[in-house]
Image 1 (cartoon, rainbow, N blue to C red):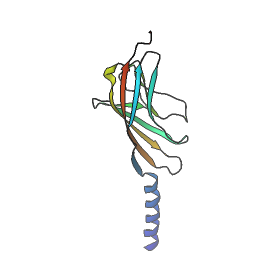
Image 2: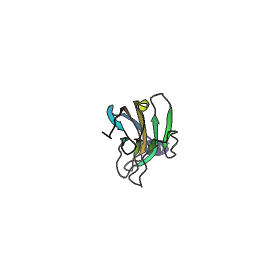
Image 3: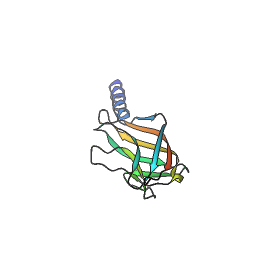
Image 4: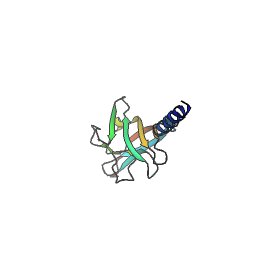
Length: 138
């Protein structure tokens, strides 16, 4: 009976270790952006090079949440997921040519699988985007 209990305990420990999830809140960041068709800015949550990005979500200032990765479901053409080749894919959203109405607090949620121990991390960060319009023709 004891050997079965020890085997079960060892198996349960190994299974639990592979599926642990940790939630991390990063500090808020302020991002200033001068709106122009040829200038852009981005918000991102970095990850370790060999970790795998599972999903990336963005919450807009109005509270609507959209999936940015693996399916870019953001309905705005000037707000988009910033694509890269593996293993350089991270949770990053770009802004180009948006108006002042795009100002507000955006939140990124990055869900990553770690290569070292097969654990998962949900990382959240808020970005205060301040969009200003400037006339570069002067």
